[in-house]
Length: 120
Length: 108
Image (tube, rainbow over all chains, first blue to last red):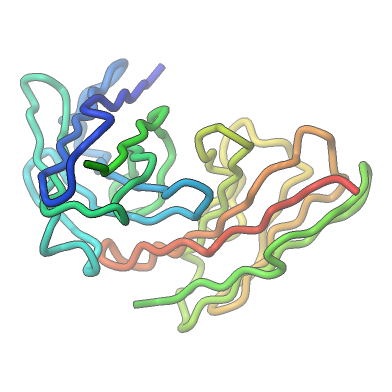
């Protein structure tokens, strides 16, 4: 059974960089049939796509976040990572990692999510 | 950016009711539309993709329809476990992934 697990600091200071990892188990991140992505949800609000990545390195980013976001992959660890620079309180959210079927940009498996709070 | 607008934002219904939620895209997206269910405090769950294809394991009381700009999610007979917020998602390109604002479904 495929599982995704987010990890990283739960508290980040304003203007610093948010860094999260997603470890994939029960399947290979190098599977050519899938992309991998990040979505976030501010407390009490809706879902926002952040970006998606293929194991070969190609990436797609939400245009509204593109200048501050980077997603990368480590196939040896079967994980992918998210960095968001220059964070503000508006970046406080539950961050989810998820899987996307190649050619179909919906999310069929999700991690449990991790809350990241931006505060001094 | 393609904007996705759901209606209503919230609704109340009774067990056994037929419930319909609407999602409208700001431009045509063919059938590149998914629906998710998010129960309180839980992870979103994929219900439907390609506007009308039920994800494996999803009860048959859920159905989706539509194409172009107008889509609907229907629950044929509301069950207690269906209390949740429902989101539509456009995926007509890898650079255009957007969610609706959500519809909160509660019991009367």
